[in-house]
Image 1 (tube, rainbow, N blue to C red):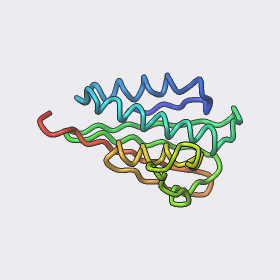
Image 2: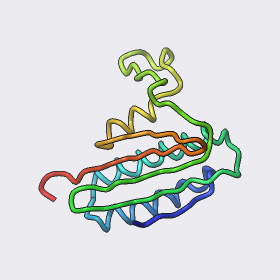
Image 3: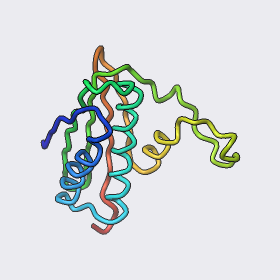
Length: 138
């Protein structure tokens, strides 16, 4: 299982994307699936940096990727503040932009573009698991 640890800073996002995309491509993902994987991971890690670590540059983000014949499982761990994704309301996509809530769109995008999104919290550790299944015909 390829694993890598990155500093919990926004400058790490391109490196995280390169790491995950290389594994996804090797596993046979391409096209829009790669875009969805990259965007889901980017949203997750941005949220960790901004909310779990509150911009403190001392935190770390650990990424584990496991590819099988039919899916890619990305496990993202951090040791920042705990987060309950159920506490964020689903965005109202039909309201005017000025009336929309500032938060929650990233979680919504992860849920729309990844096939499974699971969050767990253990004392001192947040674990987010993102699963993307290969499209039929691949």
